Image 1 (cartoon, rainbow, N blue to C red):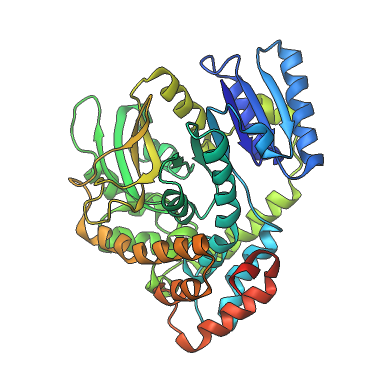
Image 2 (cartoon, rainbow, N blue to C red):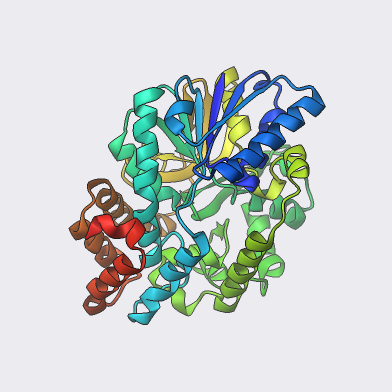
Length: 424
C-alpha cells in the first residue's frame, strides 16, 4: 500500500500525518511518499520520519521527492495539503485590499472577494496535481485538506469527475469538545448530524444514544449561557436566534458567506483570532520528534487515517463531516454542489448521509445563496477566464460595489501577478 502526502514539508501537516499513520495497525507496512517543493523542509521531515521508524522498530517505508510525478505511480491514497506563496501576506491582501475599494468583507480566506482571489490562486496548482493523479494513479483516493475547500473540490469534480476525491476539515471537532461540556455526558453517548458547506455548517440534530431521545432542545437551551459573550460569537448567536441552529464554527468563517454579517460579526474577536493565529504559526518552533510522536492534536484531527482504514477494511463506520458532491443529501441544493455532511465509509469511498429530514429551509436558503458564486469561481479557474472571474466577484452577495469591482480586480492582478497573471 502507498500513501502520498503532498505538502509534506510542512512540519505541522507532514509530521502530524506521519504520526497518525504510524499509530495505525491497518496501515502498518505501507510506503509513505513525501512530496514538497521545498527540498530543505522536506529533508527535515524525511530525516525525522526515518529516525522515528528506526528508534521504534516500525515496519514502514518512507521516501521523499520534490517531483510528485515520481511519487504518484502506484498510490492508493493521495493527501493534498498545500498553500501558495507567502500565506499571510497574500491572505492580508485578500482581506484588506477590497476594503480600500469600498467592498466590505468581514474576513478574507474562503468567502467574499478575498475567498475568490484565494481560490483563483490555489485551484490551478491543485488541478495540476489532479491531472497527474488522473494520469499516474487514477484509482487512488484523493483527500484534500486545502482551503477554500468548497471551491477547490468543485473545480476538481468538474475537471476530473472520474477521480475519487473528498475533502476533510477538523472544524467539526468543536462539537466533540463543546457538547460534552454543555450536557455533562461523554460525546460517545450522543449521535449528531451536522451539515452545510465547509466553514458554513450547523449542528442540525442530536440524540442520546442510550434512550434515543432528541437532545437538540437541551443543547439549544444551554447555548446562550455557554456561548453568550464569548470570543467570536456575535453572528454565531444571531444564527442561533433567527435560524434556530448551532454553527459549528465561529464568526471569522461564518461571516465570510453572508452579506449582512458586517453589522453583526464580532470584528474585534475576528482580528484578535487572526493576529494570534498568525503569531502562533509564524513563531511556532516545532519539536519534530515530539510532533511525530504525538501525531495530530485532537482539536485539529482531520480523520484521514480512520477514513483510509475504513476504506481498506470496508467497515461502514460513520464520519461526522466529509466534503463531497451533494447527490441529494441536501435536497434544496444541486446534486453537483460540494457539501459538508456526515459520511459512511466503505471500500468504495465515502457516501454522504441524507440530511433532508433535519435541514431547515431557512439555513438551506443561506447555503443556496453561495452555490452560484462557488460554481462560477471554479469555472473561472478551470478555464483561466478573466470574464468569469469578474462575474464571480459580481455574483458574490458580499460585493455591493459594481463601479469598484474591475479596479479591484486589476489591482489584485498586479499585487499577486505571480499567481493571478493567467487572468490578464
